[in-house]
Length: 221
Image 1 (cartoon, rainbow, N blue to C red):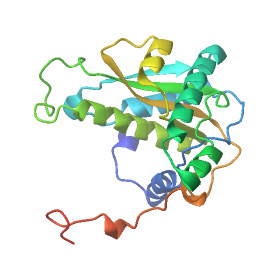
Image 2 (spheres, rainbow, N blue to C red; image 1 turned 180 degrees about the vertical axis):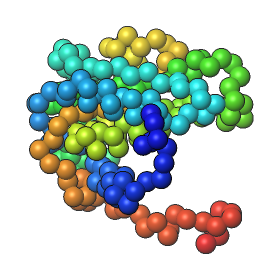
Image 3 (cartoon, rainbow, N blue to C red; image 1 turned 135 degrees about the vertical axis):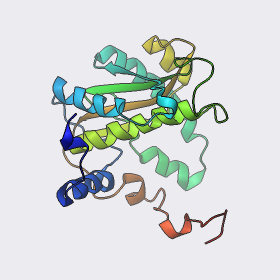
């Protein structure tokens, strides 16, 4: 990739990175129908593919979904799973849950399923010998890379996790050994919210960093 990618960050480059991190949002309701250009989609997928992976195993695959019929099948499963999820909350919490828009499956021009092939690197993998879930965590790093690259491209991303895994695998023809990691909705948006929607709508507050940082051992501050 050349010296431009290996040298020190300029002040402007550093600020741009933090801008992407702090302005990234989980987008549900602001998608526009404009298509995502193929060259832009490829750039954000390339960013995902350059995520760190333990043992350089690169266990991910990316299923790009634009077919409205496939999206409709995924959305139908979401609707069922969402009813089941709502029933798990009580009282005001359930009422608030029912008012939240938690997906943009049919609205976003591109849906993307990120998967993990847990057998790709064989039975013994450097760095995974004692923590076998490192392949799953590596795929989550790919999701984060893609999300930040998308934000830099002006694209919104929404992560839909209220789905039945087996139904998702059946709809997308995912083999039994492959694990779905993330189902993402991607597209241009009308705007980015100034703060996370779940925060502004009263679902949860952002925790204070100092509450979460320990020194040298658990709960030592």
